[in-house]
Image (tube, rainbow, N blue to C red; front, side, top):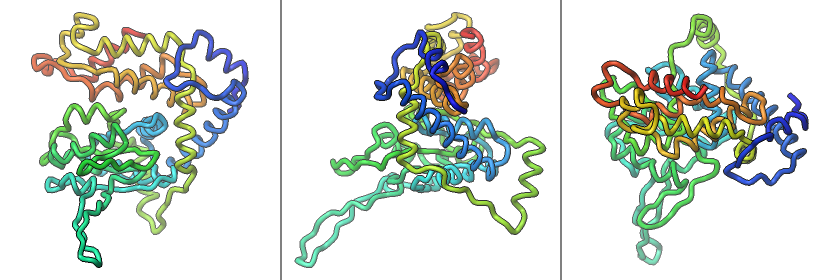
Length: 348
């Protein structure tokens, strides 16, 4: 898809701020966007050869990565959540690390630990041995099977992109993304994630059973003697360039106002009285920031230069559902998803 100067002028009409000031002129922005759209198409095609169906899930995961954020994939075992993360890492050319979360996992198993070593002169010094968190794409498999203490070991890394051990700061590689898989909380042996950690995930991506045709294709193509492998389509530096481009895409006043209205109305006492009375707590400013970035990323993913109200409406559910809770008296009658849909209907 080739963008034109007319497309650019249409998109910047009545446009507002971007979080990162653009260093590109109009022609450079158009050219960079064209190149990024082509690269993203190759990535989607490559992933589609390994993961059958689940188009919405793949789209949301790619939006998360292009936004520079972290994703939480929630679904029953056996729905290819782990396979999707592995495929994404190979396709994007990222250094992957995997942690299988279990009840006996300790924070040091994630971050790393200091060991006491004795030198040739019998002097003793501590040396830090890095844990698996020092990768570009960290797959936290079944994250809610570990204790809350262990889950919290990811908090600093996910927000600040470094860890602190014994007073020393250790920078994480760039780009750095956490894609965590989670089993439904109704299953045995699971612990709910703390609210502070949930807020650090840009999206909660729910994974459902595949449709008939997709599952039929899975049966045929994954039970033979040939195993398909994803091809590398990008490098870490290429991904960083696209992420920077996402932050430079213009956003219209209507879209910005819609994001603000939606996020603020998802808080108790700050929106429509009939809806807000059911909400115990809602998203903070990070929710609005996430929605803004994700809307930009989805626009680029679909070959557009700027986001629309449709992007905001479609992304509202995966971005807000893990940042809200209902009052105990309302949980019998409503779900978070129903409340968010009511809020979205009021901004459209």
